Image 1 (cartoon, rainbow, N blue to C red):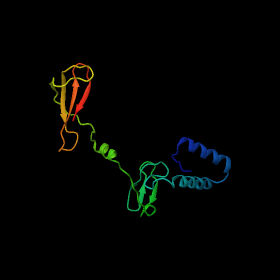
Image 2: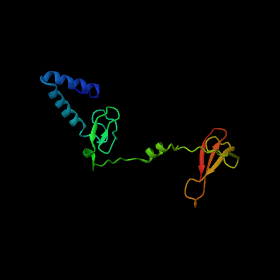
Image 3: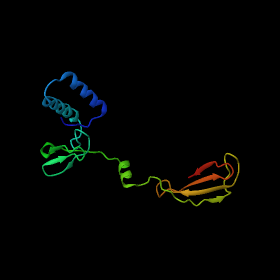
Image 4: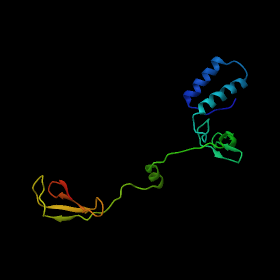
Length: 154
């Protein structure tokens, strides 16, 4: 009898069913196992092994083989079938190792031209950043030195 890689729960359930309902030759058991695994794998992607789930490799022009359990299938079985995968921008960003946070060193400048709305203190640090299109003005960000209250001015 061949050894199949299954999740523990599936393996136990299948073996219990075999012991209860089958008394006969090992060929009969193998046939039942084959039918069970074929039904199990029908809904799965054809490029993945129907026994262990590992992605198959094209080992020759005639066979695709699972590198883990060595099960081979004929290329005729997968010829003409298509696979489609969806990749999001996030998937591509992760694959390329691109960070979404750009750290910038901001030059903070001091001013006493503004009065804090929260505490009335008139010393602030500020910096400007272009937030919208280039034909519109920059946004200025103010932080009160006394209470850390933040506000903006367009």
